[in-house]
Length: 119
View 1 (tube, rainbow, N blue to C red):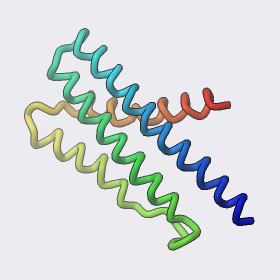
View 2 (tube, rainbow, N blue to C red; view 1 turned 180 degrees about the vertical axis):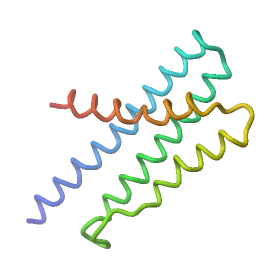
View 3 (cartoon, helix red, strand yellow; view 1 turned 120 degrees about the vertical axis):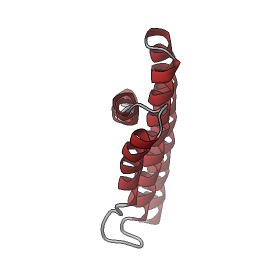
């Protein structure tokens, strides 16, 4: 049982690292493409949103890792990241909301690609 648990944890950590890495790569790619077609202002918003998405993904994975050992449900602290991103885009003049939100949601296709390509 302990060997199976260690194997499952190792697979979880591998998926977590791969998902974070693929999100960072997709964010860099989206930032480069958006800087070519839309300019640095939009590209910086996409990059800030992408980094926020990586932070969200990391917090979510950390919460899932604790599931079963310390807690019975997933924590909600990762939900602060998109809320702070929206507040920051309203307060900061160099951050546009739509490109930042699109950058934030880049973690979803990155995780899906990572899962489908690993099989």
